Length: 253
Image 1 (cartoon, rainbow, N blue to C red):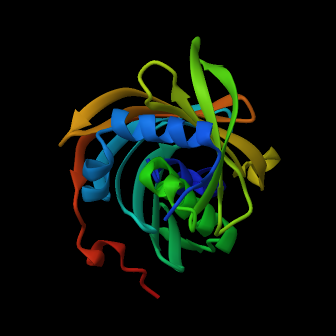
Image 2 (cartoon, rainbow, N blue to C red):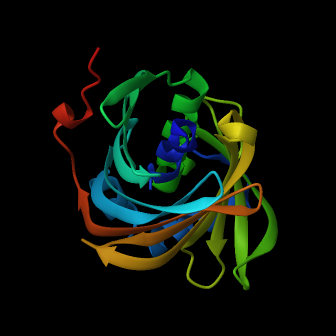
């Protein structure tokens, strides 16, 4: 069952001249303004929040709680707690640059988990993309516009971002009216048959935006794997911060 939680860091993590076409650049610039403006977004490069929701564990919707902290570039900490068939499960993952550690505790048994390099890079790329301003850095991303699509019944402008660190696309969907980032999509790893990890297409729907210190942040995420709902998470106690003490992202041996 521990494999059900291995891709969550990519989700929470709730982000030079541009190598971009003009339409994509215009969409991103509108989104930056909608989320608080470049100066504000670049000032607050870190955040903390608590989370509560439900996740699919072997076909059963299971409640979880947790706490998240992240700082761009490339720092993230996740703690998740839940109970499955009477067993208490805790998942901790820390990412700090090129170092990462994931631990799953089932009852009194602690099980260290390997964090794959591509997973680390994708998590960092997704984190940076959702901060928006890094999308205009040609050293970090190439962006291009795609055809508009519907997201929850409303038109969305679509930008495809390719991180320079990993050759995988991230699709970003921005509400045509508000400019807010309302959906992301990318290939990642999720639980397959019997819990074994397999490639899935992950779609995150972002909603219920709230302004915190001048930054518009989503307080609800619904995650789909291959078109099927996998997780619903509600964020609270949201803080946007200029920095977080690096001790919070210590990766212990």
